[in-house]
Every structure is written in C-alpha cells, then in structure tokens.
Length: 189
Image (cartoon, rainbow, N blue to C red):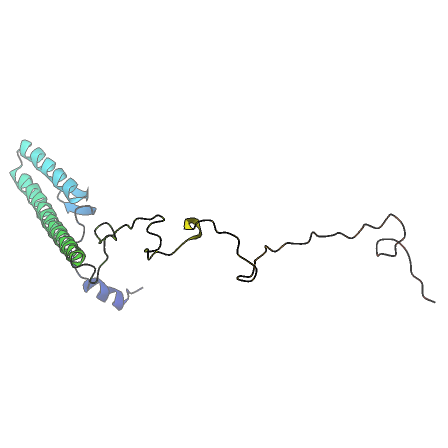
C-alpha cells in the first residue's frame, strides 16, 4: 500500500519548534547503539561513554561520544534560553497588567473596580430622640416610641385576620350508609 501524499506533505510542512525539549524523551542513534532519554540523560550517558572510551585508549570513540554529547547540550541550552525568554516575557506582561490595575484604582474607578476599604466612607449620624426630627434617615418601627391607640374616626383600625377552625364531617357509624364501601347493592326496578 502506498502512503498518502497528503500525509507526507503535512509531515514535511510541519513547523519545527523547539517546544518543551527539556522534558521530551529522545532516541539517539549513536556509535554504540541507541541511547534513550531526556537531553540531560543522553548528555550524561554520552559523557560516560566518552570517559570509558578514553580509559580504553580509543581517542576516536572518545571524540565521537563528546560530539554527540555536545549536540544534545546545545539543544538543551537553546531550549532553556527560550524557556527563560518566555518566562521573562510572561512576568513583564504580568507586571504591566498589575500596573494598569493599580492606575485604574488610583483614578477612582474609571474603568476599574474600587476597593471598598479605600472608597470614601459616609459620616455616621448620631441617633436618639433629640436628633430624630432633624434626621433625614428613614424611620423604622424599632426606632419609634410606643404610640397611644388612635381613635376610630381618625384612622381605620386593622384587626388581625382570624381563621375559623376547620370542622370535620362526622364519621358514619358502622352500618349501611349507602356509600361505595358499604356493600349495599342498589336495585332499580
């Protein structure tokens, strides 16, 4: 079966981004076979192989392993630089957003929220019988003095609505009352 052309096109046109190389697992085909792991693990493995080759007196293999380790070291360094640049850009954007929020708060709510603790607070007015007439506050039933009963002519009296107790129908005595459960049969002739 022949591979699809669209698949091969997509594969070659892929954006090659570094992405998160630091944690990605690679398969490296080196001179001693495959080495698998994260870039740091591969670097450590090739450095170990280079030391072993050096102790064995094989300068060519030592250089080869060192070059493989250097390749992965460069990839790792580039990925770490990009991560650091992204982190710094993210922090800068956060600082800018925070400064913008602080400016909006300083302008008194033009486009932002006001912190209730920083908002101007109203003065507290004294309460009591001597200030009751001059107060512009709404009078509540708790704050009123008890009143004398008003005459019937001046104001209609409101009596609380009283309910009549429910009365139950008396139960029929056990006998033939003609109900559906009584067992009486009605005949028509």
